Length: 112
Length: 114
View 1 (spheres, rainbow over the protein chains, first blue to last red):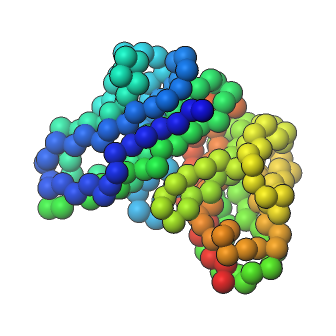
View 2: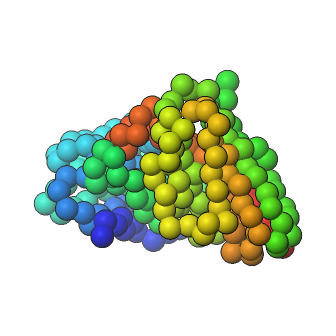
View 3: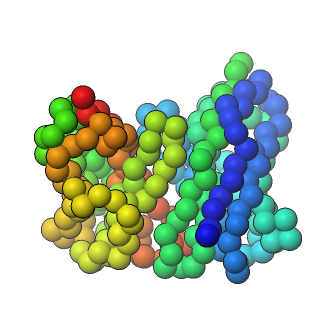
């Protein structure tokens, strides 16, 4: 079946450090891929998405590239801030009308 | 303006009780969802409605019954609550049932069953 795997957290970084959160998926065909972010005490928000191979999604300094050959969609940011502390969810949808499957989430804490 | 709102924010109740959680969206979206997030932050879809019609119904106990009186509202009723129902429940909406569209989440309802 379809699934999403993320690196285990929690991840703790110092402010201005480089961030990578790994995400790999299992699905046939070309699913759409997403990163959602959940700030403390809030619901999830879409951070970025990519709908076809080699697409790069970007938002708020975060980027992720859809890599079909490695079935990956790693999230990166060049310089994290304290305000980036949150839980990050990688997700996929195999078809337009199929449910979104979320990964287990990776907790990020950024310390000053 | 709140886009997706849920009430109540916190709900503490005893085993065996029946409770409801309400959700409203003012985005004009056609599709609404209920998700359950467990204590480890794992998120799983429960139901999805499009224009008041059920389109996704995951394997959840039939003690859980969604109701959509109109496309702006999706309520969740839970009968005979059990300890394992303790979780955060999120409502979400999207413009269309096309899952490539962004989903907008409510703030969540933290349900604690004692």
